[in-house]
Image 1 (cartoon, helix red, strand yellow):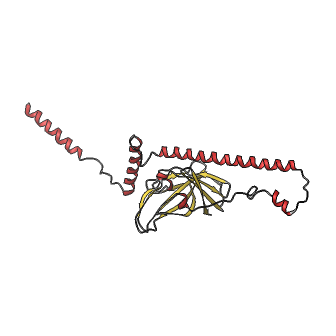
Image 2 (cartoon, rainbow, N blue to C red):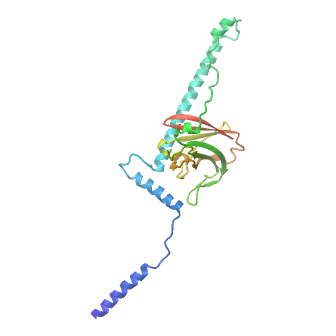
Image 3 (cartoon, rainbow, N blue to C red):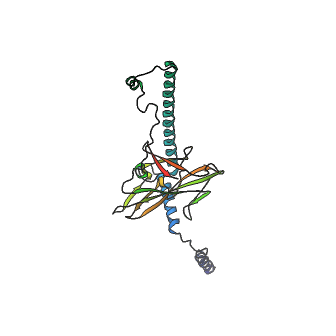
Length: 264
C-alpha cells in the first residue's frame, strides 16, 4: 500500500512537470513594444513615488498643469483686451467732449495735440524662432509640415484618434542637432503649452498625448548630425478649415508666451 502511494505521488509530480512545459510559445517583444512598456512603467512608478521630485511625471498631472497654464494665459489675454477696450472708450469719449467742429491748427499746435506714438496704432506682432520659444540649447527646432487626418499612428503601439466630429491637425517638427557632440534634449521638464491660430480666426490648444514623439513631452539624446521627428496634435471640427493660409503658434514656457509664425 505504501509503495502504491509513493508511485502515485511520483506520477503526479511527473505530470505536473510535463504540464509546465505545455502552452503557447513566449511572445517576443519588439523594440517599440519594449519602449512602450518601459515608458508606461516609469509613469506608473513615479506616480506612487512620494520621494521623487524630478523625472517623468504622470500624464494626468501633465495635462492638469498644462490646462492650468492655458487658463492663466487666457485670463491674461482677456485682461489685456479689456484694458484696450477701456482705453479706446476713453479716447472716444474725449473726442465727443471736444466737439465735432475742429478749429484750424498750426503745424506746431497739431504736433502738440497729436496723440503719442502707438496710442491708436495696433501693437506690432513680434515673432521668434521655435528654438527660442522652447528655450532649447544645442538643438534646433524646425517646423516641416502639417496634415489633417482622422487618426495619427506613430508606431504599431501608439495611435491617436480624433474625437467624434473632429479631425486631427498634426504639425511635424524636427529636432536637429547640428553640433559636434551628442545633445540632451529635455522639453518635458520645461512643461510648455501650445496654442495654434489658423488663418487668424481659429484658435485651438494642443492635445496632451503619451506619444514618445510628442514635442511637448519629448526627452532624449540626439547625436551629432541626427534629428528626432516630433509632432504636435490639435483637434479641429470637421470642415472648419478649408485651406490653410497661415498659422501662428503660441508657445508658453514658465508663464512667458512667445509667438512663432508657421508657413501655410
